[in-house]
Amino acid sequence: MADLSCNLAGIHSPNPFWVASGPPANTAYQCHRAFEAGWGGLVWKTIGEPIVNVSSRYSSLDLYGNRMVGLNNIELISDRSIETNFREIKECKKRWPQRAIIASLMADTRENWHEMMQRSLDSGADGVELNFGCPHGMCERGMGSAVGQNPDVMEKIVGWVMEVAQIPVIVKLTPNVADITRPARAAKKGGANAISLINTINSITQVNLDTMCAEPSVGGRSAHGGYCGPAVKPIALNMVHSCAMDPEVGLPISGIGGISNWKDAAEFIALGSTSVQVCTAIMHYGFRIVEDMIDGLNDFLDAKGMKSVNDLRGLAVQSVQKWETLDLHYKRMARIDYDKCIGCNLCYIACEDGAHQAIAMVSPNGQGLGPGRLPGKSIPKIKEEACVGCNLCALVCPVEKCITMVDISTGLDPMSWEEYQVRLASGKMKAIPAHD
Ligand SMILES: Cc1cc2nc3c(=O)[nH]c(=O)nc-3n(C[C@H](O)[C@H](O)[C@H](O)COP(=O)(O)O)c2cc1C
Ligand code: SF4
Ligand code: SF4
Image 1: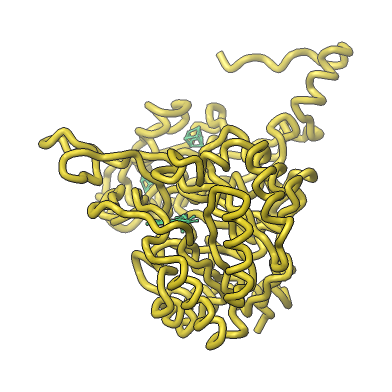
Image 2: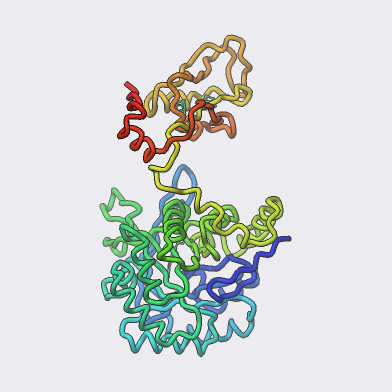
């Protein structure tokens, strides 16, 4: 069994799986349930001056029978009193001293930030997370993403918080910016101990074409909301990577966004996260998902011979570099396993209409027939001279490992775009001919 314990800027938890600030982290009752299930930490639903919520709050993107691939919400921060929230944090911390409890905070003035920090300390919270990410409702009041989108303001407010901070401070970033490293650097300059990302993405998930009102409908009117769930994972991974790569950020990261299972979590950790946070998947399937996450991560680390989750952290960060550093001489090509092919022709039509016309449909000529294929039906054949190795056919093929992409030796030394430009300028090589 690998050691799953983690330490994010001094916040210790027995595993890297934390409940993210949101509906599952709203009450002591839920906190107890989460820790009973095995979660290593919990970021409390954001505490601030209590607000009033609307009744209809969520809307989703369903895809081909899969429910809630993306979730949209127009919920605000906690609608419970500040007193109740801190009293319950204290109660939970007493019962679960080994688990991490982080108070998520939102305030406006310097005095109010100082007061919230003092109350967090008094409650026994292990750390605080500053919510500069809420993309609706709170930003119109000068808080949430209104701060997260303005690095100068954020730096100033983080500075206020750090004036009195006696426990670690995590700054939670909004993804609704052009360059995530700018607010991340501002958090660092302000003195933060860690960052967490991402909060939700501005979105409208659907329009009801009978009522002509977007969802969620609040009595016939809607508002843009925050998007999360599996659909946002690729955006979150990219932003986590950008922060992990940037030496000017240089802060521990708590990764968030679309994490539903151990594999998602492992990918965030490989791209530089220390802990990971989950909201939508808990809202969908409950706290129990953490059992599989713990087992899955453990098995994976054991299989890879890693003694600790720390050995995994950041292993994939350097694999993502600027496009101009990639090898222009690298070549791959599609290969079809005819024993697996069911003759659905999806690869053919995708390549013919959406790629490079590199697949022909040919008669079987005695080729092995895969399960489900009718005898005599034509089969796809890769035209090797035309295949550019784009991967599209392998992505659309419905049969696992039926189309694989294989490396092809070109016999040429690696050459990046940067090197290509130098060689062209010095006359050492001619331009690579266009694909006419
Ligand atoms: C209904 C809902 C309410 C949320 N409320 C908060 C909140 O109060 N404070 C906060 O920092 N993030 C809040 N979030 C954002 C989550 O903490 C998280 O950053 C986001 O949902 C992405 O993670 P996920 O894809 O696992 O849901 C909320 C998310 C949802 C879905
Ligand atoms: S890899 Fe791209 S170009 Fe090659 S056969 Fe598949 S879809 Fe066509
Ligand atoms: S998509 Fe896959 S299964 Fe379908 S014809 Fe192409 S190779 Fe065969």
